[in-house]
Image 1 (cartoon, rainbow, N blue to C red):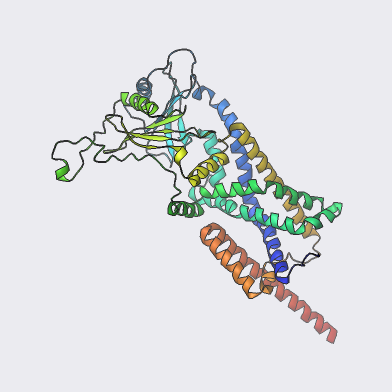
Image 2 (cartoon, rainbow, N blue to C red):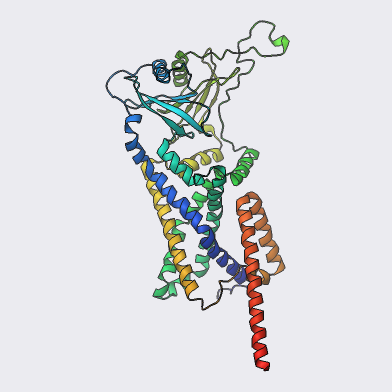
Length: 462
């Protein structure tokens, strides 16, 4: 039984995809290249950070750790003010330092002023700014900001979103082209070795590239917002222990409080011993991870939040909310009961950051990123060779196969493009710019061809 030959429509769609893959590599490739190289730097930075900040992160190992209250008091003496930390991360093991984070004006989003205190000697070993929920130190913060926004703030985030928005299409398009051309690629002469290697490596890395794209989009500004709305609509949000106290959680000021229609206010006065009480209550409630974060109440009718922050495997991110007076549990979340989508989101982000499986995770991701850099380099080599041997002919346009498509195929492609453009706005806008430039190139090329034909016809008539 002979294989059915491809239809004219499938050939045109294949040509359209092939040219889109080419132009994605040419024009989006530099953005993807920067993201890949900075991602490699981020993945390799933890050992360098451990070495650079060793004296900050580690203290003495001989002796008895002091209560959190004493450690916070030492930090307050260092600051010269009785400031209450906005979050505390107790030393996870003997020899580690306790991290005390303070919210201050002048810091950027997700930044905290952090003091590191030796639990045994009560010496302040470090005073610096940390960033994000993972509390990364300045070196990795700089690399992270470059990776996500080119150190250009919110405007720079468009670069990483542009790269993540096109990477999945480049990967899927490359796999589709390989499936269509795999037998022809084997028959190519030795001069086309780069093309074969590019196609083979792209297929090998395809799952990793799709993973990079999907998880990267969750952090993006525009597509990330759409993803968050989608998760919320389907009930896939990550649960979090509520710190809002209800009537039943709050002690009633007097027997007439409920009849007056309001809750009795819980005092927000925090004494340093409360941090030790909260830590003890969280342990009794079942939080067993070595790495915890204690967050005191932010205002009236607010509870303490104690959260596990160990995101390695097995993931420990349970939380409890504690009443500020009695330290009784008012709410609790258990990672084991999270919706599957919430678990996958948590694992995907941690895997992308290289923390889920530690050093093995970082090595695998770095190898994928190195492979992506190699793909881009080979792609530009092939494009340069094609340009040199074009014999004066221009690169083909997307408009040519598009105009030849049947109406139903055009409408299908248009529908898919609009739907993706709404879901991935940065991708949609960049695609529109692609199309407008391509249509202009096609028009100029057509005018040039017609003018040449008219000139030849005129010469023939003479």
